[in-house]
Image (cartoon, rainbow over all chains, first blue to last red; front, side):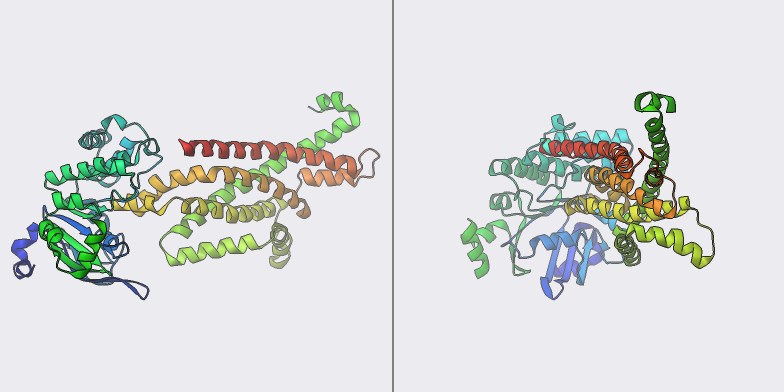
Length: 255
Length: 229
């Protein structure tokens, strides 16, 4: 991290996201404390920790769904601020997958993929359709294209949500507990899709409790507790030899 | 038409019913004016209220509070009788009734629509915004279509309130079903007593309102079915 700061020009192309001294409050209550994090391009990061520890808030700040009060967040070389005019541009570079999918229930699966491409990227209907089908095929549900989200299982809906985000051709994908709202038997198909996505070299930040996924895919695991980053390490070191007492406690509870 | 009515109800009652039905058209016109005018202003107020702008929100909120808190009858008096005498201008019953009902309708409609917009889960906003869609695109393409389905039954249901509300306009000399009913009932003519005329008037109002409330109910049922899909 220190090195990348020393040579920002040279390194900036390789850095997807930088958070420096980020603090956030809801009223008097602090929900993020002095967060420092640098994400390299192509890096896969898993953020875990007890509920209410600030994990979701952290990644929601990265695409400015929530604003922070102190510190700087830089995404693809663009530094976030409240006065930003082009927050939409930043958001289309950072795809996001939510716990509750947030598909548009009044549109078919394919139209869910088409609408944002038409409106945001101004693509033609034919092109948007083609790209939509391409990514629906990638997440292995092209046959569901004409159904409505309510007709699909949770796992299928989440895969549609991933395909919809990928249609925008983002350089970074944020996952906010993508499998937490799913029935256990559907977790696997979503994780599989995420593993495949990781294989394409996509930069990924995942808030998840799926430790198997973290071990298999992550380059780095970040543990948050009480609104700050407590420990970060490679998956092997993190799981086999956790340094911090709170990390040890957390791992003993969930593994 | 009058001949047809007289052949069924006799000369006297046929004529009475004809006069009442003839007056009913003005009830319908006034309802339409209130509904279209109130709908348009209501839509503007709804948008002003949800825009991320403090000034427009305060303006729309005050407007809605004001006109929801004043009885319709009071609005009719104020605009139909108060304004002409204070400003020494001529305000026709048509204009006064149209404005009063428009104000009344718009305040209620915008509350119904705002409620519908807000009942669309916040995740829909976040989902669309996270994809890079602007506030406007999100509102028009994602939120409004979902809110429309929620808002349609109560909107049609409210039309019933508007139609019934027009009956108050008789008080400022607006010539509608209510006014003619009252005129006939006051006429002292045997056979046109209030207990005969007013039930007929009530039946005509019922015939206007009942189909609307049934339609509104049917749409609600259809929606409830759609949700389980």
